Image (cartoon, rainbow over all chains, first blue to last red; front, side, top):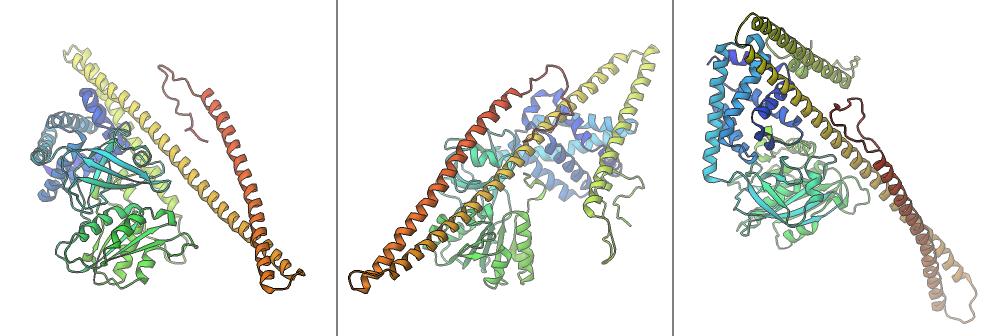
Length: 373
Length: 231
């Protein structure tokens, strides 16, 4: 397999942009109409993802470690979409047909053989990882909504229970799909540490024009069915750290941090935990009663709600980084941050400038699967 | 010099998308970054379009070349025609998919605008109500204070400072509640009128929307000129 030739060939094909993915999916759906049901109505985001994944694979083709890790994750990840071992062959055929189509006269038997070899390798790593995962985990977890409440006009809190046990680390997330928006998966964090009864709490804020969040916030009711993907995410409590803990949550970024606080509550000798919860207006502090319950018999837990856009708010006022900065010295803390990306970035920068070491600042790394609105 | 990544000297859409420009030195005039970005986007799309046009022309050449070969008595002609039919089918399905994508994107954009407008209106209404409430309180307090002063100043038939003070307080409270109640009445009346107006407007706009619903043609392609729904 001539990797330089592959890269060169992919570069030429990729010049056709979106048309490449468009041709690939149309070819696949025409030859195997049953695969159409695995995808959402709108394919625009899907096509971007395919091209990105192909570019990553081709770029890393010589870096065996990264290449394999990426494909294994991709193979496991595809199980929840309903991908089966039998799908890999038709996908390969359509991929080769697409590459042939866009390569035109450059498509030689040698190049075709190289691509066939490369794809077989990709398919093998992905389907092996999927098969491995299948021995331990279901493709997805069926869940039923137990309760659903609107806390503000655009923020809902709902509780679910899964049919099969789902074990996860507090702070992690799962992709969620519901019948209201078939084949659209978005990540949400569990807002509690794992419980005996298997119930989980999720916080969802409606994104204007969002693909899934309005349906979850407004459309769910007790009894609604959801499908949950496997737990992912690295925003979890640093093991064995003796430092005190700073949690900074903006909006529904509260969910993963509440789960971490819940985990610490189970410790026999909990560290001091200071949780800052920020919102624009007082009503955006949608979970205060619950948090107060959590802190009522927890002398180790301090909760500071703060509001940025209401000059009449009686408590802490200002942007989260400012409020946190003036409320203590944090250099000897482990910090966990969650919320909208700009807020989290501003907060991380501020903590770094206050002397918190980079290794002590924990944020979620969404990587290639960052949920889009 | 702009930094263009990529090893070849051919400019690719990717390279245009990833191009970076150094910023102008302080105090020197530079182009608006937004405009430059927008223009790069336009160039990128145009490049993609040109590449695709080139590919379909190459296809056409291939097809014609095959036809010439087929006419010369080759028995592979049938296979080529099948291939052609498949590529045509792929094109048709791709166009249908693009149309579906655009409808979904339009619907999402429409819902985003509606939700944003609703959010803004909500904030305005809340702010207005807040300032109105403050005004009502202030007004009631003002009038009530004047009433209390008047009661204090009024001559009394029976002696006793306590009673005078109590009467002043009574006058304050009575006036306060009167003024406040009057304001509240006016405010609630206005709200009711608003709700009625809203109901009327909704009925008429629903009827109008139903009347203007397009009938879906059976075979005509979607009209690319038709604007996304607004208002």
